Length: 80
Length: 451
Image (cartoon, rainbow over all chains, first blue to last red; front, side, top):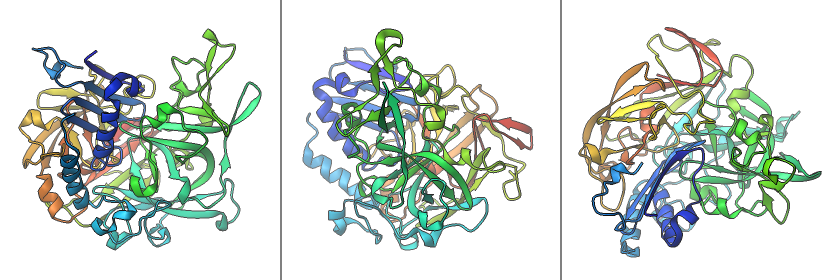
């Protein structure tokens, strides 16, 4: 699985979803929260990892993909 | 990963410093605020900044020199008084400052380290055994872990008596791994607040889903805890043999304003002054309880109501309404990309790169200066209004030394989050679910937003 998007009442299990990328996600998440404060959404776009998390209570939103592993011709705007 | 550690540290800390958010107490040399920041509680004694009016309380988006606030840019805070439930003396009460005003969530959550009055631990009975009630409350990009206790909650002169709140405590019982994976708030100093008060359009933080025994329905964010573990499901006689733990509405953490007396519980309004293009060092506004129910809370005749999703707590859309920006529709029944008003977000977050804005190096805030517009609509597309807003170069804003900006914005590719900047220069009405108020155009029933 190279890209996942969701909108709903809960986030999926991010550790399971991200697999070996989870540790990298955790580091990027903590860095992002230092400037995206309060309940601001976050968007992480690093070599290797793209993560968006946001929403409000009972309305979680996110998109995840592994950069460099999208098949040729896939537009990220089509991941939804 | 090729994103180097050194690059990450330099870039992020530069912005962090300028935004008054280097809150690590060991890092005082880079923290330009003069307020106190310890892991137990932040800010000055709250008694100096409480309200004496009957149905209002001051809101600050402010710097440390005027209020003792030790937080971050575009952080609206109030002081909240909590008391032992059904208290009989003011000696059973304390006032806690620096509580984030969040229209994107529901319920009061305070760090246990900031609480010094006795509250009542809530319990839940599973298979004839009583457990302490715990909670992992998940937000869009974060979480809070801790116990559910009851308290009397006072805002200004209004009191919600004996209501459930969350006592944020990273070390409460044993945190489930799924909650730990979301990196819940650890302490006031790191979080930048002593707590959060969720005052959005709904009452309970979960609603009917959390009162279900079906694991497919119940999100399982309430837990039965003892000293060695917390569980959100058990083996029982329900369908499939595994039951979620049902928590009745009356026992869920609740938006305190919805529990105020009649005339003060049909909604609230937030009024914040406008600021100039380079921001302000400190602004003071007002939270007013009740809408058109008593003297002092009558909306202007120009206020228009934009309905939110009435089924938002059970359909996955939350407090959604519609925003159309740059040809894309966010929110509404047909969209999987939400749009909402959230005073607990410290900027405007939207897909600016699709509209010619560029991100600052190493940060997802914008380094472009631009004027933009969008259209806000009710959840079912009516009514609608055009909204103009400005985006400034984040580095320029940071160098101003100010702490409150109407034009701080960042990239978020697939949602439209109208954060704190939207609230500046406006009175925004938060109409509570199922409660009615009369506006110039007639009666409106929540959930809705008005401005």
